[in-house]
Amino acid sequence: MGEHAAFLRGMNLGRRRITNEELAAAFEALGFKQVRTFRASGNVAFEARSEPPDGLVAQIEAGLAKSLGYAVPTFLRSAEEVRAIAAQQPFPASVLEGCEGKLQVALLARDPGPDAHEQALAHATEQDRLAISARELYWLPEGPMSQSELDLKALERTLGPMTIRTMGTIEQMAGKHFSD
Image (cartoon, rainbow, N blue to C red):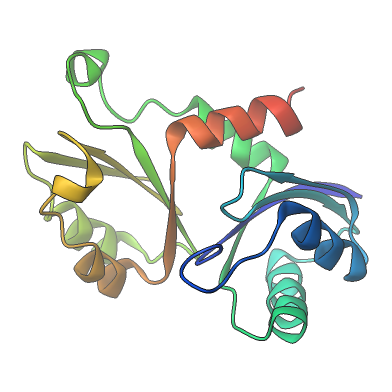
């Protein structure tokens, strides 16, 4: 059995409401073990038989679409990957000091490749710093996300589907559910 985290996009927005208990039950109905939810924004830690990540994503997306009645894009990471993301320091401490914005992590469905990475980084400004790894885009807005002028739709056209969490959420999830 391998430990994984599913980061679900579009949960508890508008009329789409699901409790953590209902979400955990939906994952358990799919045959996953040790299901734990984290916050009410679609973060699920669970254990699954070893199988390719794409197979797990397809299983989760199909199962949730059937049980919830709408598509739920799923971004899967292993426990090791969640710990690695939490340990990332994409910007120097001098940049983080005095910054009012929170470090954001955009989880990508797949690595879009070097050309897309370069195109995405071209959107960076002094107000919206960007760094990228294979399947994560790190974004440090100067202030609240709502005040940023970063074109997230353009980034998504370049990098593919994504869902965003604060680095704090990733760190807390790693510490609570995937500590060594």
